[in-house]
Image (cartoon, rainbow, N blue to C red; front, side, top):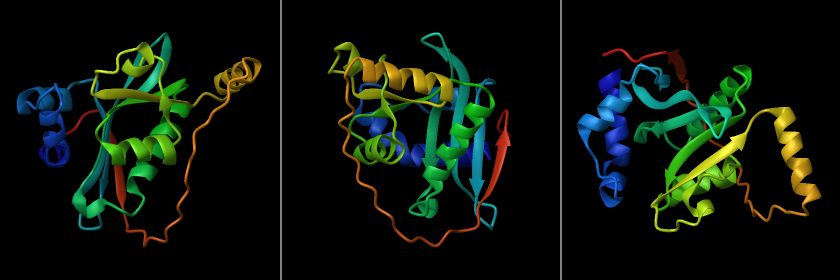
Length: 193
């Protein structure tokens, strides 16, 4: 499983990393992929093939407990059936059940499809620690977050209303009928070879 999830990651992301200032290193990405604090949600098709995964960690960011998504990767044969959305929803549910305050992730600015998915479909916002929110428009990535704690969410919404801030996000909801494949999920604290 470890090699297959790594292959999906490399197939999907190597070019983007190479285009960024970060560059791609098999060794560094494999070390991150096999870090003892990494957790995985792995999706398999009916034949048992890995068709997607999320890699995440439970961390403290800006004094809040967060579920930080390091990777959300869907293989070519798992796309266009709602798998990415479903895996994100499972991560958000895990965050709530574990009393996390936010789900956070990093996304390349030039990954328009991912940015659209997270911002418009999943309703993630630029986080206050994102480079562009801190005045750095040269960074090639953004940090997005979503508050998943109901009480904190309510406080933040009240604060926005009191400050007369309005959310001007324009979202376009497209409902497409997709045949839902049979998918099996497994959750692990580490990923086996």
